[in-house]
Length: 487
Image (cartoon, rainbow, N blue to C red):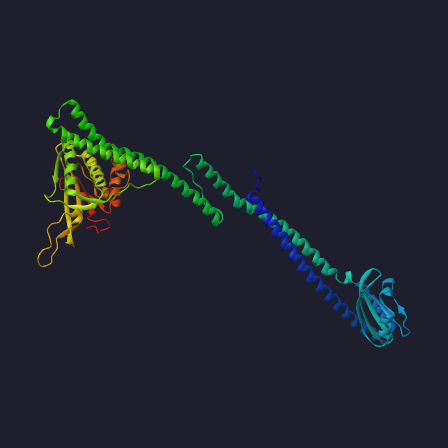
């Protein structure tokens, strides 16, 4: 396994490197500037002192006595004062002074010229400032180290400050690195907990914006995993909910045949109903296989021309027997003419079966359940009706047959109904289930949500309301053609 340094280590090293480089650059620039300025100031100061010493030496009755007083004053400043007499001899010069002053310097002074030089003498760097006087000349000699002592002290303090700054920067780098890496470590621990199957993981977003964003992303991942797993559980519940209706119909008719309560002349009709329900069951199983293979979240929709009046009668034939067995009155309200619609008949049956299942569960004995079918929002249509069923040929005067642009399927019951507050959340998963569990008979809490989803997939809408029978009313509106307007 490749060893990787931690983020805290890398940030600390980076902070240390930046601090050292910054200190080096600042030190080089500061020392260079201070040294140059210090040298210039030292030479300027020594030059002024030389001018002052010349003026002092020329004052008074005895120039030699004046020069002696000037030497004493300069000696206190660590500046050697050397006098040059008219014969070119040096007075008051020590070894450094004699090594610093050349014959050319003496000749220049005796000739009335100034001397201002910097040279190495006796292994040391010295500054030399000479001025001619009435009796010869005066030369000031100062070691460069003495002249720049104050500036060198400043340089040492600057270097010390830079070293302290580097240490402080490295310490702050370590603290910042730990502060940044701490929430990342907690986020990593939360991610490991998610991988281990824990879903109650919450990370407090803290630290810099990017680090806090990582924590928020982990929280979103935990929520998404929780939601996804809940969807999986709901999917299993919805599968059982969808399979129950055809299985119940097949089981009921099979028991009737097995018990011999079905007259012989009705056996073909009962067999046809069972075959239809078995085919619907096979379609549901095929959809489950499709979902397993494709990982899809939506059922397949097969659009075709459908006579919704005939579909409602077929559904009524099944649910009439179910309601009769439960002591509930069933009534079909459908026109005598065909109502054509381009939709998926099996999905429409799923919607109706889901609404019937929900209604039958809560409707008491003797109360009604009603299925109503009607066409609304008629507009002028050009050409034939959907499915090829024409209401009549082209009429004289150019008026064409009128076709509906939406179809209404309505299931009403005489049960306890829903409150106004219930209507707003009727199609949300498990809301009514949690609200009425233990108060009335409830299913899995997914039936109405499935109805809502199927209606949306068919391009329609579904809404809940109050029925004239005293219970709940569920109105499904489907467009005559896919993508058409909903009335």
